[in-house]
Amino acid sequence: MATVTERHAGGRPPEKQRTRAFYLLKGMAERRGMDLRGLASAAGLDLSGVYKIRDPKLSTLKGIAEAPGIPLGRLASRVAAVESEAAR
Image 1: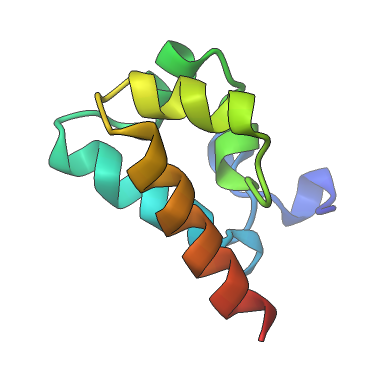
Image 2: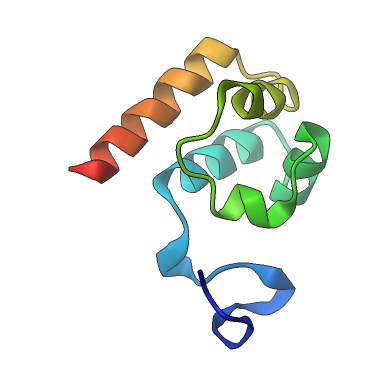
């Protein structure tokens, strides 16, 4: 985990610590007119949790999917695919 001095403004972790799932969620939210803060809030998550999301629980994915209206199955399969690719 990054120390306070390694973090960027606003509590965001450095770019190198952001996951592929983060970038997937960011893109999906933006295409639906949401920013990350709005997505996190609507999903009941802490913003820093969205930045560091990795292998999320189904209940977490459900909250994230409902916020911008993404079908849960689609989100779950896409997150699994990017996390699987990252593990290679």
